[in-house]
Image 1: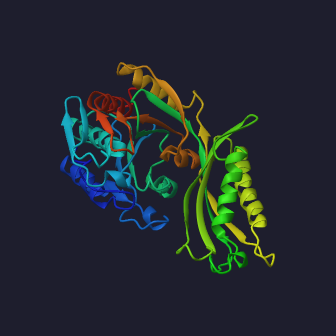
Image 2 (image 1 turned 45 degrees about the vertical axis):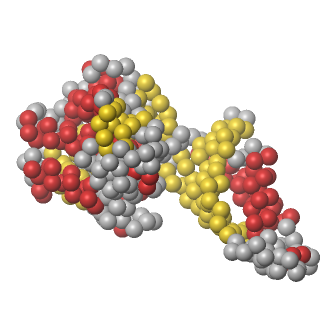
Image 3 (image 1 turned 135 degrees about the vertical axis):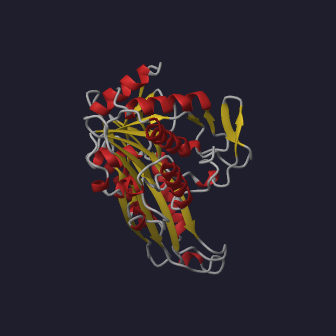
Amino acid sequence: MRLMAIPGGSGDEGRVAEFIRRQLVRAGADENAIVSDAAHRKTPIDGQVGNLVFKLPGTISRQRRMLVAHLDTVPICVGCRPELRGQRVVAADSDTGLGADNRAGSAVLLSTALELLRGKRPHPPLTFLWTVQEEAGLHGARHVRLAMLGRPRLTFNFDGGSPDKLTIGATGGYRMAIEIEGLASHAGGAPEEGVSAIGIAGLAIADLVENGWHGQIRKGRGTGTSNIGVIEGGAATNVVTDRVHVRAEARSHDPKFRQKIVQAIEAAFRRAAGKVRSVKGQRGKVRFDGQTDYESFRLPMSEPSVEAAIAAVRATGGEPEFAVANGGLDANWLTARGIPTVSLGCGQKNIHTVKEQLSVPAFHRARRIALQLAEGKS
């Protein structure tokens, strides 16, 4: 609850990281074992701090394990006042989210580290990684300095949902910016002399919707999603708008089909640009800029991290539920960078909304699972 009360959206995680650092030191952690990288200097948004890493030497001879959680929350959670109501935690204010995504995950890691520091329990070499800017595009995991992590063999990411849910795969995402250039003219005196950038955008979006390339997409065996999320442009009703900025995304578990979605979006905007002309035959122009935000992955059931997570869930009285996410996780980038990562929930529900809540019993189960994994019992 103390973690959820600390403001810390993407790029603003400094106070959260410092709170965790202080708690570790008070419990006896070697200050030199708590370090930060410079990931925040490589991200598209300004950031206060990089990823926070705490490495704990092993007391038993086993392969290194890593526990991961992200520090940031979505903007709606900034200013939250967490309140305990029976067996759940909610936001006291009805206009803010709780921030259990993912302060609950951060707390699972912190409480596990504190338990090991204070209780002198036997454990293999461990790495605790608190990432930054996950909600803004998985930037912390994408840019984490791998040399700091100690080459973990098994890795477990604690994020949203039930502690019984093991997310063993996730979709890949591509984000794009579309610049539409039209031709300005007086909308009342000479509209025929202009080329409306808004008109081009409208035709392109209608094309995508009508032909099944917007929203949920199914084409033969290919499945995915796309969304036009932002449209910016225009300053007055008496001017034919000459510039519009559009931001869109495409997702699919199949990288080849995701590229088809991207190509369909680009083709729709090019067709639209060819249809909107001035009285003199002038046309608009479209430019595209995009990149893969994160690549899709799917872990085999034989992956050691998956096998260990299954055993830990069962050892704490649960039964694993396997999932493949349609959104991105830090596990996407960690897996892509050679660290196969399975994700588990911490009891968060209705995340990214004002109705978010945290189940206290589920949170404590997540803590028991994390400790089971950290001690190498599973």
